Image (cartoon, rainbow, N blue to C red; front, side, top):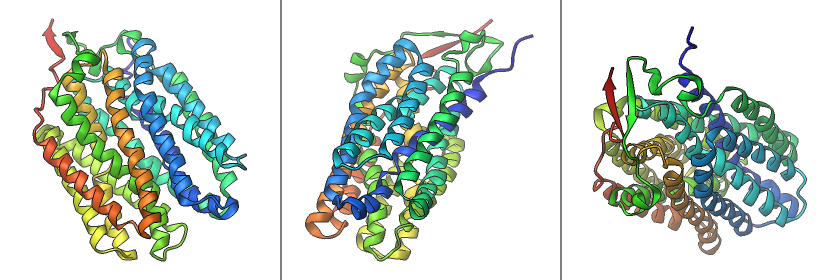
Length: 409
């Protein structure tokens, strides 16, 4: 008797992995204040450590993509999640700023490169073709839930038990929950267990030639999608790392930033579900343009009307346009270039995304130090998002079957 289709369990595991990976990597901004209070490390140097994280993550995305294409997603995801967990345990011992740079800026980033969105998107795309967009969306909701659960938890732990306890708890979440589940449940491909993509038993899928990384880099569509995605990276991490400090600037408590990021994550989860339902009706490209415009509006709102209550409005509007961009871009690249070299291709796209993310984090801290507030940073983000929206309108959308042919037996 054939076992039930494993695809739904794969999506559940990738959801859990993304919940842990994004939840951990996006907590850095909440450690700024206690590290400053304890050691006197200023915002520019802490922002630089996060920028190192962004750059390292970006550099290792193509490397992890090549490893995934060669060895499969399972071992890469499990090993990378383990590295993230150990890096957070080591972070609980820091007493010098170089240790924060090493443990969070480098080791955590390398781990995140191999167990973040790119790796899990490749895994889901191997198990689904016809339902790829919907399943990528469901899997990617783990990014939102991770923020919704782990960011407020981090703020609570820091406020009540100290930053060292927070580092330990977060590291153990990866090591004793996420890693074992990946190792025991995940299979790299449906044919490893005698199954087929989407659980299809009435037809076979024969792959046409997928694009190589070199071919993708020569494609107009790749660069349109990637440069639009880069504006997402700049603004996503600008907000995630600096919103807690900005809320303190406006007179809010140290826990307000975590609460706002949690609200944004909840709005993002709702938006993620809605975009998953609308993908077939509206198409990925149109939804992407809408999301860029919504995020542009959120940045404009904060640039012209800063205040505590405005932060709550911003959290909802910005959150609805944050993480849903990721599965849409991932899905478009997968549809256009196929899955054979998807790790390498997505890895390069994420490298560009992270280069802009690092720039956003660093410029956020630098402009805040030079001008005394974040206004110029918000205007810069709004300009980039407008550019991303216009650029995305120029992209041609491809069918989800562009890299497969359905052959009825």
